[in-house]
Amino acid sequence: MVRVLNASWLETFTTLCDIGHFTRTADRLAMTQPGVSQHIRKLEQQVGQPLILREGKSFTLTPAGEELLSIGRARRTEERALRERMQRDDPLSGTVRIGCSGSFALRLYPHLIARMQEAPKLKMHLSAAPQARILADILAGTLDLGVVTAVPDMPRVQATPLSQEELCLVLPATFNAADLTLQKLDDLGFIAHPDGNAYADDLLGRNFDDYRGAEHLRLRSFINQIGQIPLPVAQGLGYTILPRSGVEGFAHRDALAVHTLPQRRFHDLWLIARKDRAAFARVAATADGILGLHSALAVPRPI
Image 1 (tube, rainbow, N blue to C red):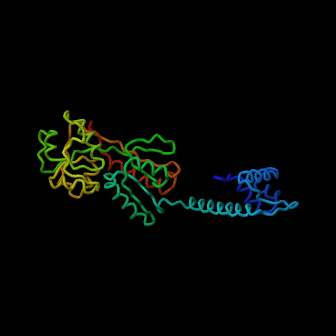
Image 2 (image 1 turned 45 degrees about the horizontal axis):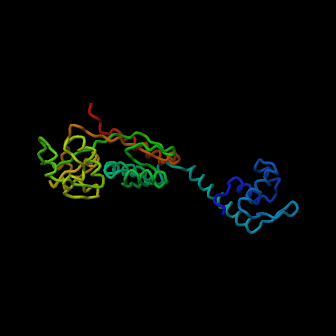
């Protein structure tokens, strides 16, 4: 079974069928006549069937040749359409698909809305997803841009530093955080979410000697909707741990308090794209816009 047709041989065959003459085909393709004949023979070997029947200086197509000619012409049409799309690649029109964490999406989306208002023909798709899914979708081409916390070691992917984001211990604004201990936090109760345990291990493990792992925290609630995670905290029902963007994007920010622990934790954020898609004008322009938000999105490390 033929899996991939040789593009060069197929183009020679298609041109031969269009012109109907070996010598003129060779001239059109800047080849020799024996070179044209060799391409046809190799294509027949790849297909496993004869494609033409020679009749003196002319030829007729076999049924297999007729089928292959339709494929060759369809491929030409597709390539021509692709070239036309590339030539009219417009930074202000088309669709850009972006993946990031839910908390980062809360801060990024308003800026994407502003960009769409400036460019009515531009469509923005923003998806909240875990890091591994973002990278897989970038490689598959179903995402154009992604925001991740680790540089992928993959030659097809380019990564650009975007910002640093602090991991925050989020408490009710009314909570007395003086002389904070792990027991006080346990008495309040943990508002968990899909990344909550990893965040707890990362931040609480650095600051409390008696921390034994997220599985030992007293769970008060669990929710997987990023915009709703701070809600029970704002109502005094528990504490949680989120990137700062997840706190700043909450509508009732004044009902929350971010408690700074002695050992602060920062995550580096990287803007990634598959190298071939990064050249698309709309993707490159959107990436430049996101990188331009560096000062607004970044949280400086303490000196």
